[in-house]
Image (cartoon, rainbow, N blue to C red; front, side, top):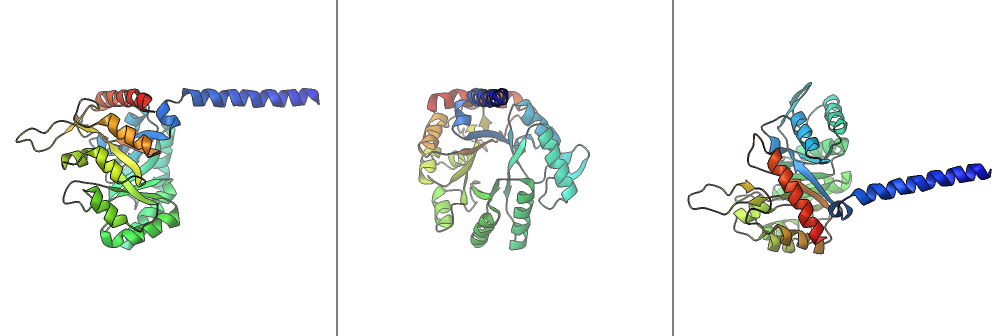
Length: 285
């Protein structure tokens, strides 16, 4: 009997040591609940399977998928919330085989209530935790009902003008009175391109941030069509200031790397982004 007790105690002690070791290996961001992932539009020149491969190569565990990406591998069609169950299973199995979780999906706009319901059913079946979208104002209450029904968070994204949500004031007015399942996917680059201060924008939507499309962008030059993405820490965005604000808000959630540059070979740049993120979060947290 004493041997059995000793053996069980030894097993429990070993499990505790392993658990503590695994936790100790996490960096400060992970311990704070900050989950770094990639928005698969970053790899839209490639298919879904290739995007998952690149996510694994980067050492990331989370992905936000975008609709319309060719699936690749032995799967026909594109990433689509209307895909059949067999294809859903193949998609999930491929991501799982690479240690990648499909955490979020979007950005999407559905045209009617039936489509919104189908989208939430798909997200529920796939284990997706966040739907990134830009609903028409008339659909917001229904989307809120679905979010609570399926227990899936909604992150409203801010594309540039003429998006309904390009300015945080418009977002706050639109979601006033809705449940805490409805929040924002803060695209900090788009805010800056619209002449807004991302740190101040984050302050305005305190308590509503569900996820981020995180990035840095270059300075605006005369005659240039758009301020493209750059390696984090080399552009004009106050990365540390944004992270400090998110810390103050006790934010816990997904940072989707959406790197819209060097489309054909962005992995080396993204590796630098990840390294910079770890350095700065270790200073902030």
